[in-house]
Amino acid sequence: MPQLGFIHYDVPYMKAVRTENNGHTANIQLPTTRSDAAYISGGPLPNGTTYIMESLHFHWGSKNTHGSEHVLNSERYSMEMHLLHRNTKYETVEVARNYEDGLAVLAVLYEVKANATTDFEGLNEVINVLESISEFNRSTEIDDFLLSVLLGDLDTSEFYTYAGSLTTPPCSQAVTWLVFAQPITITSSQMTRFHKLQDDHGIAMENNYRALQAKGNRKVYLRKT
Ligand code: 1SD
Ligand code: ZN
Image (cartoon, rainbow, N blue to C red; front, top):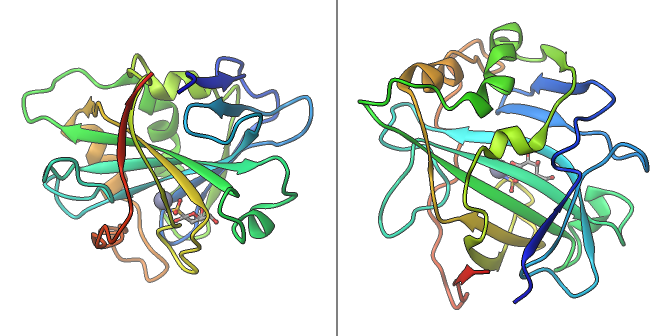
């Protein structure tokens, strides 16, 4: 399998990126213009296709013992980030989600370790603005947003991959999932900043993850590229 390729992940976005509390999560919408966009290719993605970065968001629990959507070897993690990419052969995410090769989501797992005292700095790019979007419908902008910082020194060569669905309605079967095998350690104070977000009823936004689904006849592959 070819190596998973990251294009412009190490180039800051020129346009400020919009970060919004949509009542379900903190969602960051990335520019997708010809001169200001990031992409992935290779790995398990169909040969010769490029997927453009569209948006990213997070899923978490009410406690640090749960919150991720993926579970690795029975291990639940505190939070999971989704980097949603669209196959450039489709015009929009809405169109792409009607096709099996429409979307690719990179999933990063976060583990809160009680004895971790040093923040995972990469996530602070997002965490620093969470207070300003604590209420539903609030939005703000982040300047010079850099995707590579978010991944830190995560080993992106090892991931689980399978053909699956979006985890929110309409749960379209349109996603090539790539779940990085190595979790990122964050501090409990970093996790607390997500727990302070409020939903559309002004109630703590928590447990915004989908319940574990049966694997069915899906094949999940562990890839080391
Ligand atoms: O939950 C997100 C949802 O907010 C939206 O981004 C959707 C794509 O249209 O993707 C799902 S998920 O499957 O990435 N969780
Ligand atoms: Zn998601």
